[in-house]
Length: 89
Image (cartoon, rainbow, N blue to C red; front, side, top):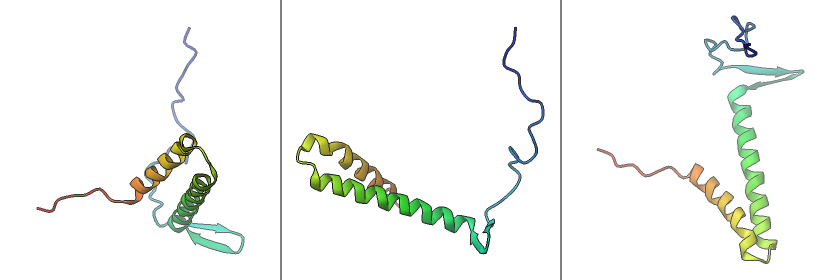
């Protein structure tokens, strides 16, 4: 007895990978924004909030073993933004 079955044709628009929405514009009421700009700003706002929280915890936690996870998160964020070294030929 086969319980899992595949849907032969997905509903239109759900898995359509042919659409190139790199220049998409999001409209909401009286506001019209570029999709890439909104994603960029949202990403940097979230990273800034996490960074401020980690620094706050590093300042206010007295025990060094409690601070290790926050240092790891800050190291991860730093690793994302600092480009890896490369040699030019």
